[in-house]
Image 1 (cartoon, rainbow, N blue to C red):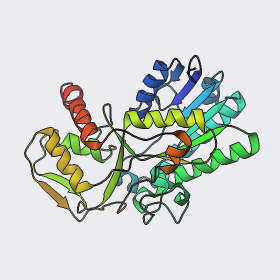
Image 2 (image 1 turned 60 degrees about the vertical axis):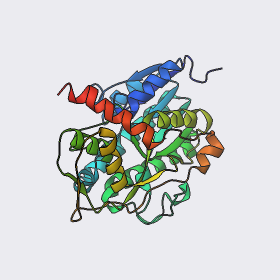
Image 3 (image 1 turned 180 degrees about the vertical axis):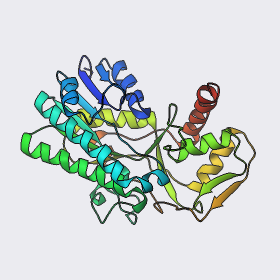
Amino acid sequence: MNFYKNKRVFVTGGTGFIGSHLVLKLRAAGAKVTAFSRKELDLIDKTAVQRKISGHDFVFHLAASVGGIHYNQVHPASLMYQNLLPTLNVLEAARKAKVSRILIVSSACVYPRFCTIPTPESEGFKDEPEPTNYGYGWAKRTAEILAKTYYQEFGLPIGIVRPYNAYGPGDNFNPETSHVIPSLIKRVLDGERPLTVWGDGSATRSFIYVDDLVAGMMLALEKYPVPDPINLGTTEEVSIKCLSEMIIKFSGVKTKIKFDAGKPNGQPRRNCDVAKAGKILGFMAGTKLAQGLPLAINYYRDYVQKKA
């Protein structure tokens, strides 16, 4: 029997990049989904959040304020405020509404700069978060602590996932707040010549295709509503240099890459240990970068550029 069939599900951030994909998958599974944009529901408004969550079975808390390296560096306090208050309001509203299950979406940004590669969940509170993600990293660590305390005191069934960088159709291409893949796609297809890349290109990252991530989230809420974090990512680790070359290749354009070594690389390496997700959830991301990048590129070319 389908776990989500006829369940009333509230999704914060449900009109955003990942959230919109999640809403579609939940509805396809038979769930009755509620989602609001930021203009429709301010998650910092405690009373409004309680009113909207009342009557739901499940809550997925995806809503977050975050950007790329530069944005995160210059807005650490804003990121703390804009991420923690909504999380606290959602947890309190869920407790009062007696929802059956909640999933808190944390982030791989909780991990320290010099973590083990691939990174196990046990290092989520080791040292301090990567400095270029300092405010956001601490906000997500604190969100996990909030989840654990609500579980301990009130018995609220809460799961926690730590996604690695997501990408795919519908991504955020805003140059002020976009992550590395949509930023590179936009600049390559918009004609930036040469393509300027921050750092020296040696930093590595692990990316997960959005549909794979959504599948992992749905499994986590269903199978493991316990505040014991689970990584959601892939075993595919790629350097920023290689990633840039792949995007240029799949875009079908000719351009050179110029590395700006005066700008920060960010975390030197990032890749996750996926063993826990496999063991507990039976989850393994199946989409390789070589499969997912062309889909993201085609989306930008067909749906973003043509509307500009």
